Structure formats: structure tokens, C-alpha cells
Image (cartoon, rainbow, N blue to C red; front, side, top):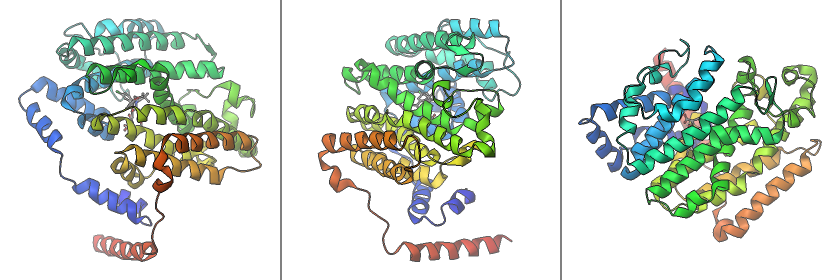
Length: 419
Ligand code: D9A
């Protein structure tokens, strides 16, 4: 925690956000939800699993309105179970494929549990106690159950196809179409499923579920950004998700990018990958614009603004090839607190796109393509958000250096006291 404050020491707005976030009283919605869990042991364990598997995103799910909270929580846990099986390199391939293809049936089998995950699989415990998830899934309204089972079926079969080497050449994803298809299975379908749940709950209009292209691209924007950010980690674990159709223009081997002599090519490749993701931004904003329910809006906006911040962080940043890069906790919390209206989401996107544009270098082979992608985003904003001129993010005030000094002095005092 002190570390989060230390990372943001020169950024007063982030320090303020960290304090607000830490000491903000729980919303009425959350308190009622917590209270109701004391009477329901099985449901309480499901939310415990949710909080174990993802700390920050779990909080966002629990802020959803009552009509949707349990359905989304269980959707998340079912997907996490499927993901744990797909990820597990210790599982026999035939067994893995059998499980992936039948997972939509498994969720209807009362009492089903799974002890065969590798000992280092981080969500092993979830599958060991999967009967708890299934019991709660079976209590959901059947219209929600159907959405979850349908997506689980399509995703499990898609993952199984990839696991058995379809759409792949040895270990690499070949074409951009294959890359899009893989991301569709693991993330685009999550976008579909959630949109179906939103519309089925009547918290959102039927059109949100009907436009599957927009829902798909909500997932692709998150997944593709993560795939760029995780280059180093995935390489070390023997996974390759970047499509050869992109990286093949810059190297003969996917692992060449970590070599110092390939610096320039590595940089160009990284920016080509970011360019592929920037094209999705207009669809992300169009999707966000159709949402009406406040809790659904926040739930969708938070991951997307994190992704555009991450996309800016990785653009033209050679650290991606060396280690894990991550946005500062203070920056993340500031974004979470701000993601509550279309105007602020648009101004956040506009801010990061502007930062990307400042780092775009005329020597980069994709300089013009990146400029055009950014131009299209700016055009989307001016045509769709009439007030957008007035919504440019305020620059920090002349007080900033003074505030930084004060915070630094407070920090020094705290550190000296600790020693
Ligand atoms: C999501 Cl139910 C995800 N994925 C995410 C998280 O956001 C999406 C997995 C299961 C569910 C939802 C998400 C949220 C809101 C609306 C969405 C949506 O669509 C309309 O999905 C498209 O990343 C995983 C996939 C991308 C594969 C879909 C956000 C999340 N963040 C992590 C941070 C991180 O770096 O992974 O999980 C976290 O906070 O732990």
C-alpha cells in the first residue's frame, strides 16, 4: 500500500485518488449485498472465490445492481474454471479437450468437482470446489443459465480447436484472422455473453445484445492489449499469441525481439501490434454510448479505460520486451473513480490517444497508419460527442510543484519515523 503511494509521489491527483479510494465508505448497494450473504453460506463461498481470483475486478462486479450481480459473478467463475483447464500444461491433451468440449454440460452436474489440475495452477482450488459454483448456477433464472451455457459451449469448443492445433502452425498464431478468431473465443464471446445478460435483465435495451460485432470488439480490445503487455511472460512460459502476419515483417523468430541487436525492429513490431488494437477504439466507444444503467456503465467502462491506459504505456516502450509492465496503482484508482460518465470516459480515451500521438515517431514504418488510426478516433469523438471540446482534460495547476514538495516532505517524515 505504501508502495502504491510512493509510485505516485510526484502526482498529487493520484495521491488524492488513492486516499479517496482507501477511505471511501461502502455504497448502500454493497452493504445490502454483504448483509444478504451472511444468510447464504453457499453464495458467500462463491463471492469468496470471486474475491480470490481477481481482487480489483471482483469489487466492480459486486457494485452491479441486484438483478445482475449473481449472474455475472457465476458467469465469471464458470469462465475462470474453463480458463484454468485451457491454461493447464500438465493436463493430458485428450483429457483437456474432452473437458473443454463438455464444460457446458458439467455446469449442470450437481456435485461435480475436479482434482486433476497441476499443483501450481493458481485457480486449482476453484475447480476442487466447483460443486459450490454449480449449486449456485442452478439457482439462477433459467434465462441467465442459458446465456452462460451457450457461451461456455462455444468458448470451450473454440479453445479445444486451438489446443489441438487448428488455426495454428506449430506454436504460433499465423494470420491476423486467426488472431482475431482466438481472441473472439476467449474474450469476444465474454462480451457477447455479458451483453446478453445485460439485455436479459432489462437493465439494458435489446439492441446491446443484438449488436454482436460491438460486443466482440469490447473483448478484443481488452484481450489484445493484455497479449501485447504480456509478451515477455508468455514467451518465458512457451506461449505465443502475436500473429506471425504482423511480427514476421520484423523478425525470423518470435524470440528475436529480446535481443539488443533487434531493437529497432522490435520497436516497430510493438507499434504495429498497438496499431492493430487502436482500430477497435471507435467500436468500444460506440458500445459504451448505448449503455443506460449506471452500474452496467461503470462495470464496462473500468476495464476499457485501464486498457487504453495500458495501450499508451506499452506504445513505443521497449520495457515490454524486458519485464512485466503495469500501470501504477494510483493511476488505476484515479481511472476507476473517473469512469462514471460517457463524457469522462471519452476524455480519458482522448487523453491517452493524445499521449500515444506524442510518442508516434516519423521514423516508425507505421507512423502514417498510427496517425490515421488516431485521426479516426478523434473524428469519432467530434461527430458523436457534441460537447467534447469543453471536455478536454484540465492540465495540472500551477500549485502542482508546491503540492509535490509538501507530499514529499510528509513521505520523508514517515520513512524516517519507520527507521
Ligand atoms: C471480463 Cl465476466 C473478463 N475479462 C477481463 C475483465 O473485464 C471483462 C472476464 C470475465 C468477465 C468480464 C469485461 C468487463 C465488462 C464488460 C465486458 C468485459 O464486455 C462487455 O469483457 C469483454 O479482462 C477477461 C477477458 C478480457 C478475457 C474477457 C477485466 C479484468 N481485469 C483484471 C486486470 C487484468 O489485467 O487482467 O478482469 C483484474 O482486474 O483482475
